[in-house]
Length: 210
Image (cartoon, rainbow, N blue to C red; front, top):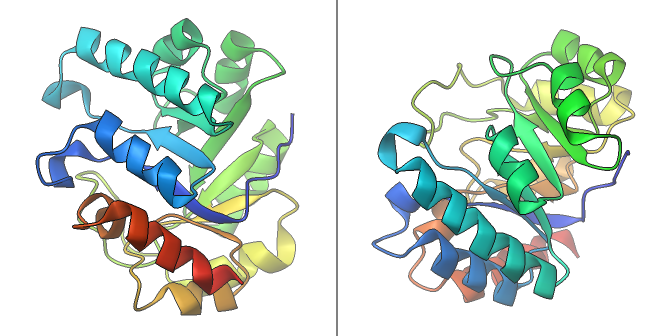
């Protein structure tokens, strides 16, 4: 299943940075702002696994009601339990082939990549889309690699046949540079979840794509 990602903002939850708002509250605001794909991302050591499952159940219901693609980060078991649209994994997580064997052919699998070699391998392994980044230095992930810069983004835009989402340290002041180098789907995490008005922030960010 090679779903093309929706053009625009790719939403990711990050409760640690959401100013006391729950992941569900943030997701509702993202959807109201016009986001068409949301990834649930939460660290196991920060939240009880049962709470993660319940949040994903609520988020699956919410996204389904609004026709929004729902992706779960890392937790393949929870994605299956809530019937998410797909899973996003990193280079150190379960390989794409293993995730595919669990999810089946009709689900979306996204894979984080940090180099041209990883992007090529993602295609060979059967990923449906790739994450391209971190483009800039980011604080939202504790185990993140060094920033890969815009040259890698340009490479993917020119050479990869897979849909991709640009991610990592992207803010309103640099999103134009990211889009200008070929990104049609862009993820901003703290810029959105930490905003005083998520709905208006998302709407404003979407104007960069027109």
